[in-house]
Length: 259
Figure 1 (cartoon, helix red, strand yellow):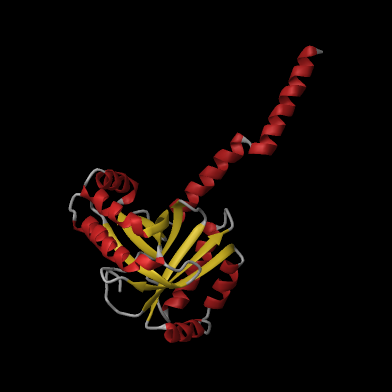
Figure 2 (cartoon, rainbow, N blue to C red; figure 1 turned 180 degrees about the horizontal axis):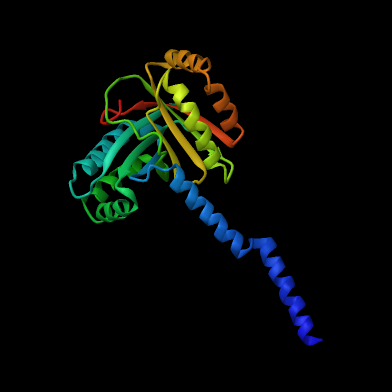
């Protein structure tokens, strides 16, 4: 009798743990799904660090000067093997007075090595010189989608648009499959500067960036894209997978490789 009672209690405890925390098998399968999705959609060669700085409005010029010294110092240091994809100021969007920088590292090993060197070198001093002008910061580590590597440095002028989508957990692969088809239609009008998905930081986030001459051109290009076969269907499929959508207009900083 006592043996049966212990067995019932054990089963009840196990059931409650599964309800509250999820079964170990489900956890392992969920982690495998996440890893599998990343392998399927990622280019895998590089890690891109998105760094956002919310700057004190009265100190933007001092911040820009300090940021230029810091980021140029990183890419000029041959020991770091770091590239600066670009640096921008948000001029329209949900977070004004925010600056976005995208750094490229040679995968996670390169990121670890580079960050260790940054923390123990003159670069730390240059970073600390920016801090008095910053209210808060955020960061993400992202990978490129396999179907679209980031654009090389260029100086074409105009504005950039960073579109960020917070997806429903588990929908990344479905989003990528739809986007992969639709981007071929969109390319006929304009190609994106880059497309990434988050791996560390706020998860289930997709970013893609576009470049236009101005807002009027953006409007015309987006209207033209709707006439391309395949693009409207892609928008319908991907929109239902997103919980939050943000679109920010960015202006490149003077030292940004992408302008």
